[in-house]
Length: 404
Image (tube, rainbow, N blue to C red; front, side):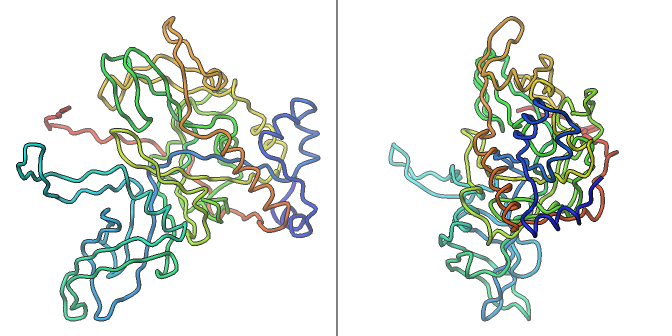
């Protein structure tokens, strides 16, 4: 058995042995769990995928005269201002939604809503990259905050705190989306073509962070991680955290399970690893690079990390049924998904991932280099993540449900 203190001592002396999780899987196949445990101290996992339950906390600093912001737009995108006077939260999926007036093709003036492919995730990326962005605010007049409005341009250098706080990242597993209907669907997994025309999955599979710690034994609240190219921490369980998901004998879940809430200083991040994105006819989101180091404290850590794509499954879900619980076409392995084709009821369906597998590998490699260079040490978790959290749906008892 090892301790994190012992591993950190080796990191600071630059004598630590660090492998990416893919390197570990190869080593175990060529030797054994016991042999790998004797050799390695830290295993690095990584992913780069859309994480729409993300956003940034921004503190502007006080104006003169002061303003108590109650409405705010950054690059025309609404930021939530229901905190202190100049504290804001910019969600990754926030969009331009203020009314505009324009001239139609027939010359008539028309009013509508401006919806852009640019969203909060794009603004967060720009701020991280050091780009200036416009800000417009409306204030609530009080005796101590007399200012009514404020317009300026901000950068990451002209604001105080600028940090990501993401309520839900890093699903331990997820679903595969298909469309058994008669017309195209535009979803959080991207476009799904009718008649089972394509399939999309979002989890990186066996190289993903949480799938390699299925029982949440070596990570917890306070674990230091790679977040967006900077240093971050596990702040809490993520929303929709569901560790009670059904599992295979190897302890991996058969669908969406554990999630994490993450936090980190965006001023230290890189726009290489924090990228705004847009899903056609669905909305904006945020592509985010996250890497978690797994300390090799016992042979069980190696055993769990040795799981391969053929040993992990995900449900194939039909989005043509517009309900919370949708029918499935069974389970498929990530080895099948990564082959580019799966079989659904005798039909060959082409498959694509939302996660970038190559960039996920780069995250793990970059984190590995930080640790080997003595620049990144591990932390003991303050509290374990909950392992018995149920998932509670929001049913509208006695209410009329509209699917329009």
